[in-house]
Length: 256
Image (tube, rainbow, N blue to C red; front, side):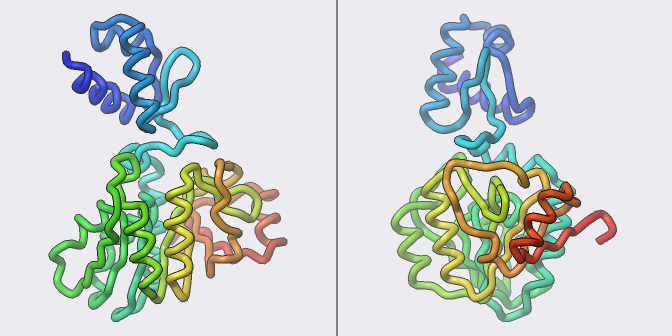
């Protein structure tokens, strides 16, 4: 097997398993452990995984955000509930920003009933969902495509956002610690901040597993959002801290 095909095979396996040991990968692909280490080094350098003791992982950490395809599979029911709750914040005729996150991206499947709308996004999954749909004016942010995040970033996307204004923006974040949101990638942070600056109202959609986690880069205080939506009850200390900070929190549980 050629190295490129083997590395793609490693990523495909990790998309399902989340983690794998060097021994398992060497056996699965019939190569030496040294070859697996070289493959993992290459994939880590490209930002697709992180090496851990004895193997590799594509699960998030404070310095590493997981691949979009992997995140799409996580907390699926909760993300669907959040998307349904979020679309209630939209009225026909408005301009809506949707960020690169898999949680915010779920809103796209529910927009047809609210047409006409203008949708601004750098999320390729959203672009694919809405392209060609009558009644949706789609503004796809340009920039450099990032395979890991399945979206567009960089100077072109940032300059375009500075020239636009929207009624509402929906964002996701990989970590919530205290009363603040964080993310592992500085380029993603910059794009999300510009989306917030371009919108009159801002909503954050995060599954409840993101609370109590931190990441390298500060994104924003949660006070910047009109409401933070999550899909499960938080531990009392976390909820009390948000209440003390005056954060508007909406828990969209299974009864919604």
